[in-house]
Length: 608
Figure: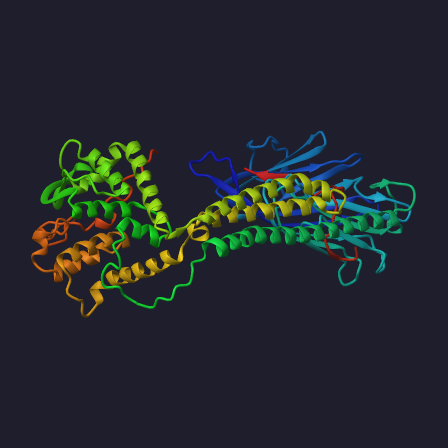
């Protein structure tokens, strides 16, 4: 883990820890001579570092020295964090229940290894039969993670295989222990240690190896069986925790899958899967029915009505004569008003026709009336004009969407029963999750690892619920077309393919002037208006330009150029118009338990 240290310079600096190498020598009197080599990786300019070593009851630390790769540091430096003393110096200060060691150096954008040597007494516990050396080789006060730690212990001579035991704690750390080839050389390795995580090493040796217990804490009676029982309990706790984790993961995964894929799949199969239709035509060469463009778009998307349907309906109203469109050339500001360009556009104005229109066409006409309240306006100004009365127009646009959807539902082409089932499924899942939160802890409280199983199961249920809600947001999961609607959609999709491939067809049938108009209006819904416009410019009869209200090819386009289509942006003419502008043991793995180790490499440290 990378730690950003306070920086006085204009740039941030950081450091991380790549390795800790610990040597522990058990002296003949039970005291421990400890050497720590800690490798810092500095990014930026650093001048100080420190170690805090905790002291338990009866524990003493002395003979402290500091050095680096090449020189022994001199004592007498300041010990306040962030203070300044000459590089190559260190200071020691007793602070209640811990010792602070501060050293000063000069490091910039480099890797440095610092060595701290000290002797601790009172850490080892001497029983009548064995000596229990239980210490933290890495403390839980480091605010930065460690890539790798290795610790070795040298015990007094005389031990034989089978007499020495070694353990590592806690089980959650990725580590291992070993007694070496001779079975009397304890060691520990661990990697990827997160911040605020301790690592313990526990070694048990025969008491007879010590010549005295002056450097240890003495406890009357035998300790080996007591230690084995404690480690057995730790191992069982670790096994229970691992079993609970596996069980919780299984329960959580099953819950997530049942809720998301199970319930979501049932909703889709029952209410979202389309009926099978026998239809194999690749193309329909003209609109297959009189279905208006907005309803076609809603049908093909299973009920999604967007600004494309609104735009197509606006142009259909021009075709029907409810809106008059006159070709014109206007000046348009660009580059934030710094320049202007001449474009060919349609000047729109209202006519007297407002009867015989569908309800959703009246909604479009209502928006147009607001835009044209002060008189005719060119098409390219519509988007901003709609936003001038954003609240009212957004409400009318929502009414347009609802009316289009209602129209295809009344025609029996859309089945929305799945919406209610989806809501019911969501409510049931929410009740299940809340029920699990209240009931599972009570059900699992007496089971080993029950808390872990409960947490992982509930997490799985929550993940499944979130996935289900996201799944149900897709209309195709809960809404489907009826058999009649599916057949209609297949035919209109074939017509969409025809318009999409229009420019690549070697032979196109004769097309009437009225059909050219309808082609363009439906092409807006399909998102292929540009292809149809281009084909009309190349292949439509010349009289189309003079008779049609929606085809116009002038000398100026939206991006300039002779004979360029006047509506190069037709597909997105009103895109975003209804959205208001935004404001800103004997070796092996680690066992469970732990936390009882004394002094040594415990505590923490840092750098500045």
